[in-house]
Image (cartoon, rainbow, N blue to C red):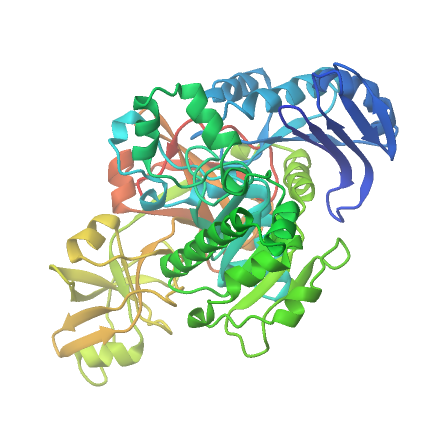
Amino acid sequence: MQILVLNAGSSSLKVDLLDSHSGERTAALRAERLCTPQASYRVDGLSIDLAGADHAAVLQAALPALTAHPIQAVGHRVVHGGPDFSRPTLLDTVVVSSIAALESLAPLHIPANLAGIRAAMELLPELPHIAVFDTAFHSTLPRRARSYAIPQALGYRRFGFHGPSHQYVSQLAAKHLDEDPRDLRIITCHLGNGASITAVEYGRSVETSMGHTPLEGLVMGSRSGDVDPGILMDMLRSGKSIDEVDTILNRGSGLAGLSGVGKDLRDIEDRAADGDEACRLAIQVLTHRLRKYIGAYAAVMGGVDAIVFTAGIGENSALVRHRVCQRLDFLGARFDEDKNRDAQVSRTTPVVELHRSNSRVRILVAKTDEARAIAGAVAKVASGGETLAENPPIPIGISARHIHLTQQAVETLFGPGYTLTERAPLSQPGQFACNETLTVVGLKRNIEKVRVLGPIRPKCQVEVSRTDEFFLGIDAPVRASGDVTNTPGITLKGPAGKLTLKEGLICAWRHIHMTPADAERYGVKHGDTVDVAINSKGRDLTFGDVMIRVKDSYALEMHIDTDEANAAQISRGDVGALVSSGQGGTLLRRRTNFDPA
């Protein structure tokens, strides 16, 4: 599909008309210094002055050149989606009003985003307009990562930004490595005038450096990144106004504040090479903080398989990559200086390796393409056809804590030659609850009589709820059933002995079992994540980040754990409707994001 992608800034506008599959550009527009006497734009290589022009005026002037080519849909980059928007969303008057209500979360960005949306919708009313949110990729952040240690009643939380870029380059890196993103732990470093770093664990964002606003985190061009809040209070007490503090942190800090010569890293590197100590300090602080975050995110994920540098600085500064990677040997990341000096990425060579052949961690530089990422997301929505909610409802199953065992484990716990005995069949064909139960031994307490499920499995696995996790005193990650690599171990006690597992304790990722025929009907595939709407006791709830699991033998059913069911007052017999998908369908705006994890 040919998608027109708009990225509207406060005084700039980037427009790309591109093929959603290949990324090939048909046309491009770049407008700068909007709403000033110096306003101008370039389209198809031609530069045109348009004094005083705003977003609408530039679009109106340039659209004839852009719309000379066929356009199937328009995609809009929206910096902040707040708590309600975690998927590409079809724009209408209600959604536009909801985005406008988020202005306080991103006062520098939302007004500009809305200016581009309103202008394009007025000029191209016959086309579908779809918003793609910077924060959406980070909607999978667990509560521990998105929460600030301040009273929750204040309503502040971490959202994260640069989502399309982090998602795009993590998938690009996985493709280059000939791996499934769901098998990798990747740290993506988006380093430009705005900079952020994200821990992408098995395809999901689990930590990111930007927070409630884009100000938190790394050293940026003119933004401070992390700073002691006590300094801000001291500034205010010393007589500076809120607007003055805002200006210092957002426009006068970062590389610009440290170097004293501006925010362009190229100039700073040149002056540092000539002996400018302030510029040297700026580079040192930038790279020190980035290295510190990489180490922290490797710890969060229990290791890292790939580190990816992208965006203007990440793609072009060999010096920054060198200073960041020179002390990462302890992670098994062995950096090749020659490859780093020669690295150049382009649309034809989008990924270049920077690691040595004996490096356990792959180090890559990848060319980001946010417009292509947005176009791909928009195409999935625009081509989806009927609303997925109109498909048959999905039965809800409530999964209690349980244990899967290998035959060897069965014999260790119950005695040589022992065979599991069936107590009752489960909803999934061929699976059953056993008569056998075990004691799960935790660091703090034990849980007695935990049911074993059959048949036997190739790996042992203990699935518990968040409540169980805290009761046992063990930190269990959210994982798909069967994915126990790099998970905590646990001790099981049975009538014939004890068994200490080195790994295998998880909180189950909420999921839907379905057959290939079901998957085709809903327009999804194995491994996709979707949203499911449930009306329970008169309350409209939406469960996000639900994994699709496809197998011939499966019966259609969504599985949630007892914590989620109790919190949402869901009981057996309730049903859900699949309302959004990464693979297509008209995506509906989420009304309530239910996420007790």
